[in-house]
Length: 244
Image (cartoon, rainbow, N blue to C red; front, side, top):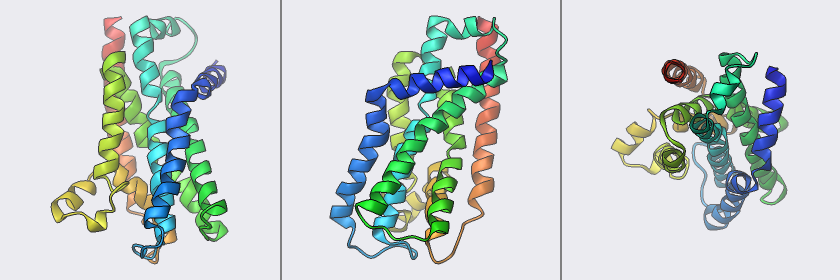
């Protein structure tokens, strides 16, 4: 039941061509544009400007994709579909895990295609180990964002969710070092950035490419964010179930 539901949800997500455009095509286009503007500048912390921009735009698209499942949750809550699902053998935990997994699957093409553009079009040169650790690490670091998307789906109506989702990931991108490097931010903004999970998402993707090596501190920070958000999701799910 769980695997079939996950497959069904994944098919629904990939059929949404408009959403895939903003999740996949836009990050690739932004990467190619930004490279033309800043690609020849000096890198940061041992990461070339092209590689830095590549990871940032992949993180931007993947973050948007990983949070996408929440909008469908908001629609299903309004239509009563989730109440119908509770009458099936599908367990609540399986339902939530499937939604989060779909978000992770939707995010994957953004990483693959932006990295492919970096390698094939902009000639970003990395070792096989750096490509693998950066890409896989970036994808796994999306777990708290998938949980955040589910949380928004349980606290927002379908109409408000359409405003909350872009506002949330744009705020995380702007203040978390995705669009603006933390190194050039004012001190106050830099301190705020380091509290946000989006900052550590970028760190996970970029640190294997820099001189200092992998930043292990990012892992417990992101796991902490994922745990806190998951606990809030569990509480909101119980509240939503009690109202049904």
